[in-house]
Image 1 (tube, rainbow, N blue to C red):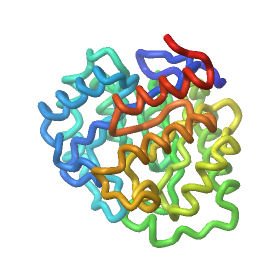
Image 2: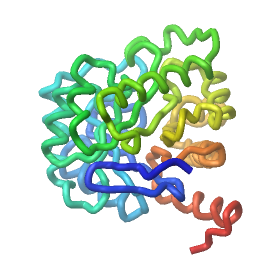
Image 3: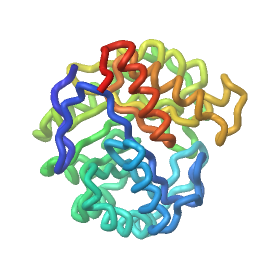
Image 4: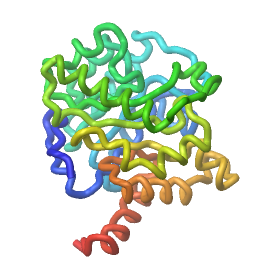
Length: 279
């Protein structure tokens, strides 16, 4: 298994997979948009996810679903900062799903422990915003950008291109003297990929391991689940759990999910079977 994961005020040994619980503060996220778009609702939902077994919370202030409109930095921070401040002492790391350097700086100053960047820290100033901190960093692969990413899903070599991108972005962070133990990589299920490509990535997930960087994956409730099961977003629990287990079986260290309690329970059973981990 990879080295320990340094995540702001926290450190994980990654001997067992971690469950990252999703907290959306947006009105238009694909799965639960508007369900927790006021600070009190988001904070209450976050505490429920912690009680359900979440090891990390991932808080988002801008939807990244296909076709999603951009949100201004001011509006994103208005959604995020009250939630970060309200959860700062909740006992688990706070990851912020953002690609804007100004937002990164503000949430880290407010107490966040991790930045989850769908652009892989490619925006001007993004690396500088995080380099001299202790926060964990998730580098994700995405072809294009959220509004247009599903318009062109053509690859010459899907696995090779995704792997090369992730390795190159990790190296950019290393060149800025970022401790490698702060870095995790995400192949970006659903971000500029067809259903068939998503499942190819899942089947070959182990081959995407770059050096010793852990893999973080997020396929909870996504269209790749709906395409196989025929279920609408709210009815994709079973498919999402199956996907999470398939990812863990192929080496994923962190799974990002909406349904924390059910995923935690499924992982406990999987570990009891695979590793004899019954306690």
